[in-house]
Length: 222
Image (cartoon, rainbow, N blue to C red; front, side, top):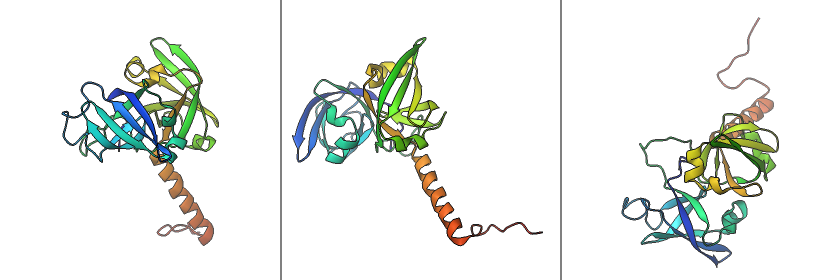
C-alpha cells in the first residue's frame, strides 16, 4: 500500500526483454536506497515505479532491478521506458506511518493521454483523455486519483476527460513536471470508489431478487 507522495525520481539504466516481460534496472536518487532502512530495500520487497507496484528481484549499490510482467506492460506506460528516462519512486507506507495523500495500491487501472497543459501563475492545470473510458465513473470533482503514482485531486471530470491542478512543488519533484500534451500517464482510481460500486451493485441485486427491503429494514406502515 502506498500514499501517492513521491519520495524521489530514479533514472532508468536498462530495460532488458525477458520471458514476454522486461527486467527493469533503476538507479536510485540520493536519500533513497540501501542504508536508509534495511527493510525498505530488499529482494522480494515492493517499490512503486511511476505508480506501478513492482517486486525488487535484485538490490545492489544504488540500483534495483524489478521484473515487469506482460500484463503490467499492457496496462501501464512502463513498456515505453528507455534508458535515461526518469521515474517516480515511492516505498510502501508503514503501518502507523503518516498518510498524507490517499490510499494507493500501486495497481494501475489504465492510462490517460494529456490533452492540454495550461499555466496558472506558478501552478499548472493538466487535462487528460481517459484511454479506458470505463474509468470515468470513478472520477468526481474533488475526488482522488493517482497519476504516475502521484496523489492528486480531480478538478473537473466528464465522460471522457478530467483535469487536475499541480502546485510548483509537484511539478519540480515528480516526472509530471516533464509531461507534455500527447504524453501518456498511468492512472489508478480511488479504490474506495470501486469497492462502493461493487457493494451497491450487490445490494441492488439483492433488492431486485428479494423484492423487499434489506434485512433489518422494515417498510413504513399505515
